Length: 299
Image (tube, rainbow, N blue to C red; front, side, top):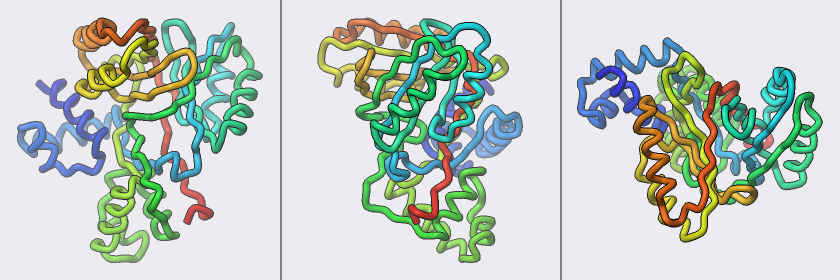
């Protein structure tokens, strides 16, 4: 029972990291006291973190890519190098056709090529394959910036606080920027509504997390809409992007039940539009940090 509640809470907090205990309890159909106990347990154990992140497009990142790396020998220096770069928000060791997967954000394709050139020069890097995102359909911090919102210095100060704790109370935020709680709430909601900002749960993925996360690359031979519809129906799907490269679509599927997870992959593979499915198991998410600072230049 507790495991099912935790998994449902994780999915709900990925969608809205600031959802109240009352809202979460209503969604799950359980008591508020149980929700507050389990959310605190998930946070205190480090299984989840709730943080805010600005939309990549708002930050000026227009070229996003999934990078698969096959290496040789000790890859610790390669992984450490990847983790040190702010334009690489995701680094994960995997079991399957490649050793490491990463996500790269860049201002444009020229900047992306420069980062890829640097990755290829890392110690242990043997092959580096790239899939360019053409449309991030679903993702933890894919807020789909509307292009019309702006921020000022007070907004950036609020974002900075929420980057470290997305559930910081409006009272504490108000004290930090010396405004009323009402004014702060209005500013945060304006940024959320403009899709400048998204607040979501980041889930730990390692041997102790008791969750399974699988990456999937699909080669399609038919209408992609049927595949996207199937992925949209699944609460286990954390990420979906249409891509250019070795795959037509990349997705991440995660959950506490390996049986249901792999059954989901079998159903996906059986779709007429799917010609080939390649999967890799995420062993350890070494870095997952989309909460980059919003520079004063954006304010």
